[in-house]
Length: 374
Image (cartoon, helix red, strand yellow):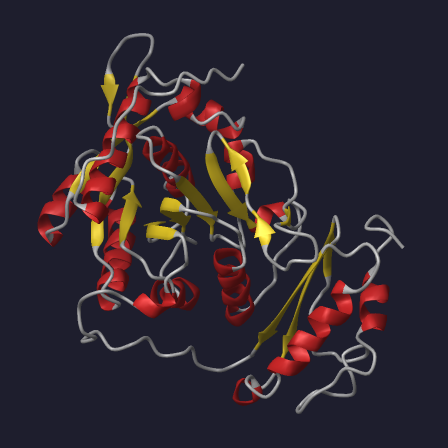
């Protein structure tokens, strides 16, 4: 059996005899097993359990991972426990003490972790996260970027990366991150097919995210940029609580509807005592390339006014631009493929503000990289 011939039936056969409290039969025949995702030797599935039995079932989960990992052609197995509950876990109280967050939960080797978030999808959050990360890298900083959007991972396309992660060392469960334009990258999009529907509940999503954060050989990084899932649901709130974030960048477009959702995002981070580094107004205006006329398609200045109202910094405005969209869609981020462009200058300026906010210092700037991608 090879990675190309590995089947869900073979995976289920490897689970024969593995059981635990609350499991109907063994895992090979149990209806509590989710759809098994297989891609280039990577096997991912979840086991639906009673949340009260999660601790008792951890040995079973580990046994399942070992059994599947031992199959010929399997390079890595990710098994998560998930639960179907009627109510979402309650967030931690808003009156938690301020100060360093979960210092004992820090990721070794990573000095600062920041989130790039939005209250809703479609505002250009992932494009902002990628170019912000590359803007930080252009300042002689060691940078990584984690795609935390399990349901709609964008980083493989935005960075033009199609390779698959491999083990950091022979027999290791730790993955080596991929690299693009000098930035280390990890995304669920590297592990599953692009058209695969990720029908996962919150606990499985959180398990996968924690593995991508903590079971990846990031090495020494000055800063890790986390491209958060859009919205402010339980998955986003839990990720904000369980990840030692130094701060968050909120991306919005100028219109009122987007700003309402941006307020929710800011409120969520404040609830868990994560500093809001600032707001970015994306698609701020359109400058006609033919006549030079400025068109404020979605309005203008709404994010700046909202930042003033909420008492958070305004990081800058990014114009709507066809070339930016084309470069992003083709995996040629503007910061590296057009370093002298107006957009690149905006992203590098934002990156400098972000770095100063989390470190209190100015990064050792170097000339912008002239990486020309044809």
